[in-house]
Length: 71
Length: 473
Image (cartoon, rainbow over the protein chains, first blue to last red):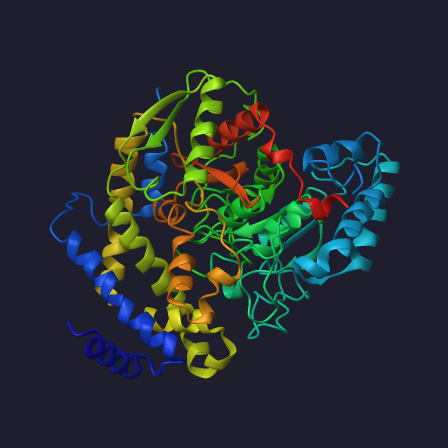
């Protein structure tokens, strides 16, 4: 993926979906850095499988509170 | 510095209750510290001296009449400037809200007030709580009392600096990616991010609906426990707040860690740590072992997923919260804030949903793997020796500054995705004389265990009693 092309397409997409234009040059660099996020998600694909997905996070907190505690 | 200013929060409350000090004297000791140092530190956005004096006099009068008193009676406090108090400024560290005066008061402020404390100042913070370094382009950077050239950590920058400099005995911060633990660490004080949902967020500026937490910074773990016992618990005005009962967080603080297992991670948290940080961390583990803790080396599961998902979750929510101001007032944000918000608008909804839908399952899998082997997880709060403000100024455009800026919160962010309670306490100093800190995380709602470990460490060592030279004058 050419980073200039990726950044350009992303800026256009943000303008069309959100009506926000790049506020400064640093914003363009931050957009280019999204490629790292894509890489992180790509690396996860197919590695996780959960039977209870999705589930309430609040309920999970309560359930997990008792893990490892002897009755 | 007077002896009164250097008391811990719990000691100051006891001094007032036993007649050894008046509330007026306690307030004067704080204001003396503030007046002597504020020109250099810049921890305060606003303050109300008249209200503070009235509150202190009223507290003394109530004591003289023999009225029942709360756990924090007569205590002057100052908080990160994002806790709404009806009619008072709540700038949120921003130009956009420089005149914002909410019409209602945050639940946590009401609870502190009901316990007898009063808030006399709004403290400096990162703009809209959106950086981990403490930079602020609108109100000026907050400076570290240990060395004014160095960062305070953020986003609760003023909270960390004000507690270290003895302006206040404690301060509320907020923590979405480390914003309580980072300034606690950088300023050598104690702080705890509670379990997600443990403390009400009603009347608190939102940054990320899923990851925002309210908690205290103070001199000691016991002080944090006292504040948390007052502010924790269900709030009908915040339907996301937990209904789990609130224990007495101070009850188990006996310094005895026999039978308790402390986990030292073999992955992620010690990666690329600076040598002085690693050395201080190793010594801290030994100190806990001396108190009877059993040390267990443990590999933490799912860290790649946790680090990927936490970044997307909070960024997307921040982008949604700020989108309208981004359209209307982009020039009123600092460069490093609006540039990051801008990029967050491009993250696909499917990524966000993936991060959210797997949060509960990952938490349960993490806890089942980890908390059957250990009771708490130990790590350095910050992996590197503390950098200067200049070295982490993301607005400078220097690529290294952006990397350092992002690297500060590597060890704190994972616990925001997992929603686990995590405390930070001082455990040494680096070669530049800046604090190094230990992070202690526990299973959901195990704040009492986390604070018990922190307190035992503070009974074994004296790092938490160290005072910046400029605060001693």
